[in-house]
Length: 177
Image (cartoon, rainbow, N blue to C red; front, side, top):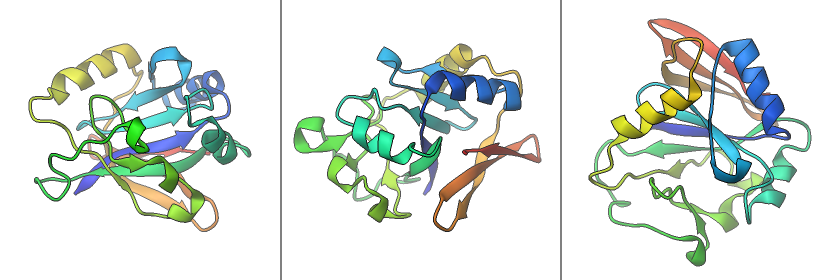
């Protein structure tokens, strides 16, 4: 099992994008309709930024971003097939998912009481993650090298406040607040 991505609820997407570029040299790949963005990292990992513009998700995001950009969840990817293999859900069944990933995330479970339990992301066979992430990196045009997520820092009462990323053997910190 490994970290697939970390989710961040943002008050203002443009402000967050500018802050990530100016402070850390990180770019983004925007989601359709301005509802969010991905910050691609190495090894098929990413930060996922969400705004209240996401259909059916706005109140949840607005609640979590009420005091500023804030972590609200994370996803892990199994390293081997397991109990999630072959299970795909859709919004009509009360779940949220990224169309190309099939993230298994029940909307009614996405509350603060969920705690530290991650969602599970499973990729369909035949999905070319190398091509997908090459396109993400091309769109993002980072000013710096990016690495893999090595740790997430949790503060009581605040959730995850930073993500640590290994870049060529040295650790970089991406603050989430």
